[in-house]
Length: 174
Image 1 (tube, rainbow, N blue to C red):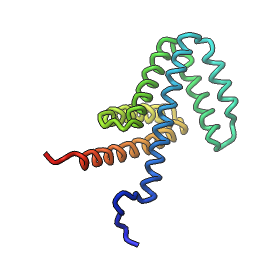
Image 2 (image 1 turned 90 degrees about the vertical axis):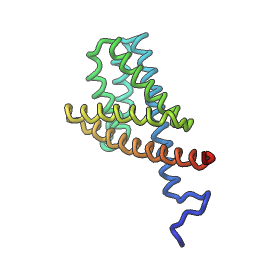
Image 3 (image 1 turned 180 degrees about the horizontal axis):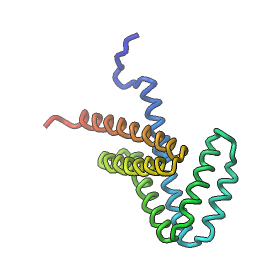
Image 4 (image 1 turned 60 degrees about the vertical axis):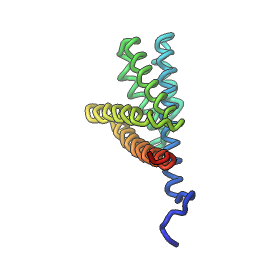
């Protein structure tokens, strides 16, 4: 069978890459929404944050290698790092971080061409923070999250290129 692509039929690897892209963008969007929600809780009831972080991390468990254990470890690590912050600073950080992720996810899921460069820039900036944090703290979890974010950025860049090509194909020659 030829490796040529039949017009209108995408090879399976493209479908898998697109699904991975959608999952990555949805996860970023949900994470952004949670950040915004936590920012509101920090502003309204800051006394709930420490117990909430540690309750959630305890519920996720500590099974070595399990994804929930990674999230639990990250929550405990982040929790101990940020609990010393003033509530206003923590809320502002979470609100900006969450709003940028949420807005980026919405633009990407709605396939708004103008939103892609902004989303990519935001993802790269957040990745830079993760890399610096991983290097400074020696956090393996943060390093693993950075690797995942590199994959998400690559998928976003791929999707952006495909969307631009589709739009150029549909535009009549000037």
